[in-house]
Image (tube, rainbow, N blue to C red; front, top):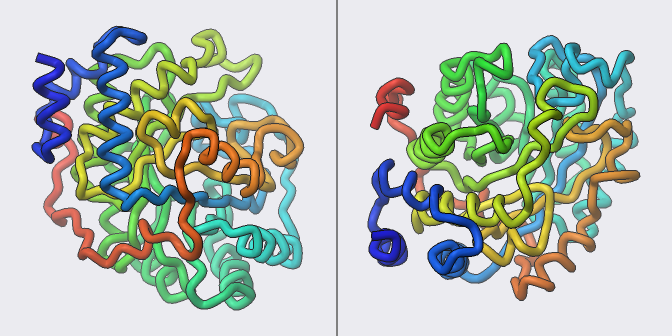
Length: 348
């Protein structure tokens, strides 16, 4: 049965939730798991025209965040950072231009929730003006309104990164419906969306993995994928440890098969060879603040450079796109129906 499901995915058929669940439950290191991962690589290769992408993110600020996502180092409840710090605009511009020069296919600006939106727009405008006109700029920020989505578009953002996370509303104080409304606001403004099944922990059930996978597929993003949770020492979720890279390779491969050819990108984070060998074609370089790091400057610990990411793809025998992202440059008319129903999606 597993092999038939895999064949269906390879032929372009849309997998049903129960079929996705069956693939998630396949034992790791079994023949079928190897089949899932090798087929996911084939699907990924065809979906993206055999060219992987390196995206780069700049964390603009550090601030104790009242959203209290239990997996995040910025959360007030985790007591990692007590003060507020912010990169000067000159520094942000220099880092963005550095990523552009290094060959990043897209540049993300990330803030903590609660960061003043007007200040983000002002800084983003300076960054946009400093970059080449065709350099792809992506926002990774708090939930925003329809009017704010239009301002993001007007200032020069091509799209956003946003997700309904694992445990949303349980391990966070954010309603899944609020996250979904932000998707809708972005789409109405013409912003393209990247998303992911994240952050995956060892305690998460197959049902929740399926739920989040189906949601990412239904919103029709430019990429989906899967990211494991990084344990923050001393916090409540740390007791669950960390999902292995091998297990995550299986999970992201299932997501790749479940999302199909119409979604060209499939990401994993943090960058690793086994993941990009098994169906991931996007990884990130990072600088500045990082919600998975306890260092103020993630490039001193977890964050990789564009060149280090390029070497990871090389080890997995991927060619990397030269120039602006083709995923976020996709003008295929991405559109989630505005009557999309969250409860209906997770019950299907």
